[in-house]
Amino acid sequence: MTSIFDKLVPIVNRYDEIEQLMADPEVATDFARIQELGKERASLDELVDFSNKYQNLLSEQGDLQSVLSDGGDPELVVMAREELESVEEQLLTLAEALQFALLPKDPNDDRDVIVEIRSGTGGREASLFAADLYRLYSRFAQLQNWKVDVMDSNPSDLGGLNKIAFEIQGKGAFSRLKYERGVHRVQRVPETEAQGRIHTSTATVAVLPQADEVEVKINPEDLRIDIFHAGGHGGQNVNKVATAVRIVYEPTGLVVVCQDERSQHKNKQRAMSMLRARLFESEQEKQDAEISQNRKSQVGNAERSEKIRTYNYPQDRITDHRVSTSFHGIPKVMDGQLEDIIDTLISWEQAKLLEEVTS
Image (cartoon, rainbow, N blue to C red):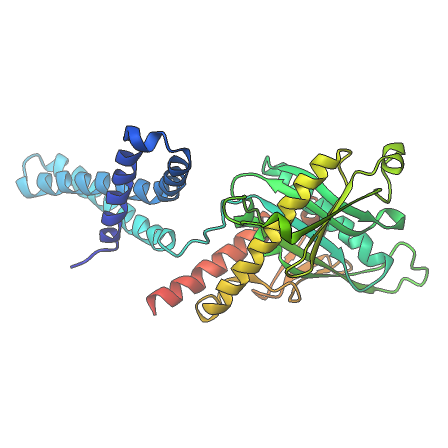
């Protein structure tokens, strides 16, 4: 009878093969190859750990069964029977956890991300909500010990943001933040509202996995690069020195702008990073469209136009429409404590994927 643990055999064999390759002197001198193998090995670490735990429990189970079959000291037999029950429960728990660990992984999960937030309908209140979302993700990143760097911003009055793009670097950033893609809606009474009426506003969040130069080849002849004076806040340097960079990718007309650094060189680097992420996302969307029927359950692939969440301030309720689940404690969530919402979305997605795999 086949067991779910049998699926680990080829994975462990591949892991051992990778370790042998990385120890090969010829391979060791090929930096790109070593990096590629290192990533693949890291992606298998969890499953190899499952295999090790399984083998240890299997060995323990065999020893305890031998004690029971041999008979002998009655007290020893009773202890062995109790321990055997515990080991068999651990094997069942491990098998259940392995089902989820074997589910298809998003290859982008370990990437850093570029997040873009744009105010939508609702005027000033929408820009204030966009600023609130930026603070939410900044605080969430800090709580994960991730690094946040602003790439481009367009402030509005009253401390709001018409648009902001920022980079988040950290382990598993995309695996968590991809669930934030889509339209966020807020219902609350604006500070400027004298009549106490509830207004509805929106902001759009895009989360782009970072791509490197090797993955996205860009022909320099396809680029038009403009240097200009940065607008908005930023002090005397912003007004006197042309440091802002606009890059137009002429084959598609795609435009990226970066102006938050005081160095033209840094702004260009960041603009190129943003462009690669956009082109990488575009290619991913094409691939996803080809296999869309297999990915319907993945809530982490929301379209930018899809309304994913409503923040109802008067009722202190956040509703995620993808999983039809409500959460309470808006101040806590807006201060970066997103874990409960994201964990719920991950669990829902895993359950749907498991249903697809086993059906």
